[in-house]
Image: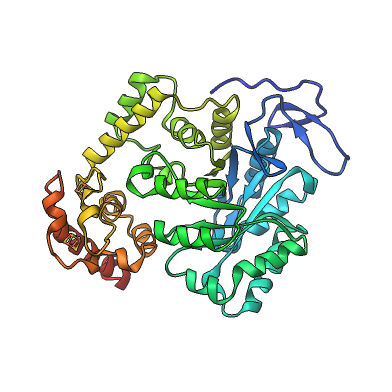
Length: 412
Ligand code: SF4
Ligand code: SF4
């Protein structure tokens, strides 16, 4: 890790590191000399790295507030002042926890993003009731970024039925939110519809160098870019999979860039995309924050050479997968039912061999019902075009059966 050099004229110490303190005595505002890169967003700037509050440090069943305070202090000190929470995170404890820490700072010194859960709404009134509860839990008078959480096939109905976008516009008029957006886990077709429906300020998208080709992240990113909607990146490390690379993949990275780490490489890759406003990383301890901040201080965009290495690592990941799908998508060009074949096969590879059944269930549920394996009519056209000679109808049937067995509790 790079050595940090702080401004020495400090009157406050954190973890043995001297920092400068400014501002009114009852609120905190410390600045380290080294600040993370920022991107312009409308009339403000946003740090290229944001702190996701989903995987907070835990002390048994409760959030470890001492560790969280240290993390937030270190983050804000280095310019990471974007905090992202949600009603559902940490069994509802995330908003309270981050609110309890952020109340020690001037409101103007941090950006807070929160999410409203469409699946929990039973009436239009619920949307406002939940919103007011969220403001109370976070101990703020307004959210900088407020969004509909996880628009996907099974949440879109409530979003429309309870006119959630219009309600966000009311909150905006009341100056209780500054920017309105949504986080997205649906199909490319659904994203196009949403983008055309309303003038969104921003959108959260799952993006990393592996999903770029396999999970349509590239097409979805382009839709947002062309519509002028900045992207906030979720899962830049693919749930940790791009950190836990195989020996072969790590050797490929080290052969070219011996000093880089898999996490640094993946974060730089995604942050290099110009329409990205900020990259959220779910950090659980101070050490992770320090390492990630190092990546974004003096941030360097990924080079064309590094781009090639990312593709080579992708190929190794695909080669080593149980189902050897290369995500070329030739099968999708011929499938009369529009089944999302490469995504289904990649969900199997990612979650089934390591027995991460609940995660598999959650991700399979996010697929549009028309894109799932049970819609296959076994015409066989896909297998005829597959360069890997995969028996696709058989694989889809096996994977959908697994899905049904996990859902019914037959497989645990
Ligand atoms: S066999 Fe199934 S997946 Fe393959 S092309 Fe036909 S309908 Fe699509
Ligand atoms: S054609 Fe074969 S290798 Fe290509 S995406 Fe489809 S299943 Fe994967």
